[in-house]
Length: 90
Image (tube, rainbow, N blue to C red; front, top):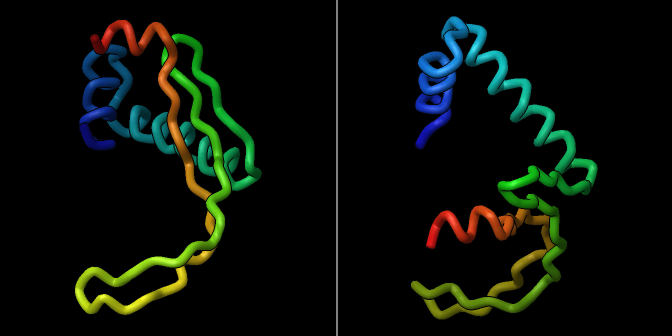
């Protein structure tokens, strides 16, 4: 599902005009981006938790050339589904 699909679904189910549906989705995504940039987690009840994790630097290998490389430390967003979502998927 793409962002355009989400906008279309919001348009169809809620009845908001497409332009307003797009604005709502853009606002939600910008809030999420800002929250992640601040290093905070987002918990959506009944859905799951998005959290920012720190990955340390490590040694890696270029699979094409076999050359050793240094993979730098970075922040990643991880998702942990709620028990309710897990049960719905099984």
